[in-house]
Image 1 (cartoon, helix red, strand yellow):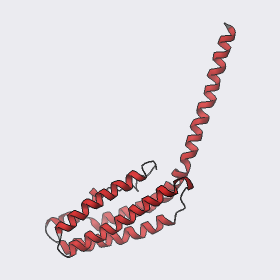
Image 2: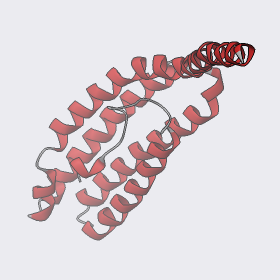
Image 3: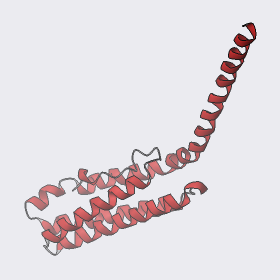
Image 4: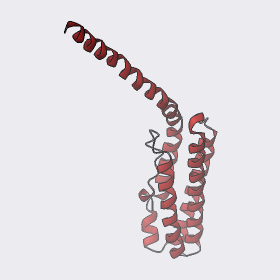
Length: 164
């Protein structure tokens, strides 16, 4: 019996060593994502704050048929996002996530295009087309968020319902 107790103790000690090592390996695998997020989050935050200022009250403008001024604001927001995407694109990506992040940046570029198109539609007084584009924008943003769901993003998650 004493040898069985020693075996059980040895097994328990081995598990105490193996489990933390496995967890540390998993954490190390996540570190490149965390490091990338730490570099990109300030860019996203700056853009998010800019777009909050630019698009503040735009829903009311559209509601009251002030479509021209609302359109100009969407175009300004598109320009601000374009600058942010250019900065994000310059940040080195973890090799293991290169394809995923390239796809995500592609969705961000599409978001910029949708904002531009919504602005143009509003400026031309085509509220229906702008609404249709807003639906497409939301679909695109969901795809972008789903692409980088494994990253510890907060500011880089897209929530267009704040604006439109």
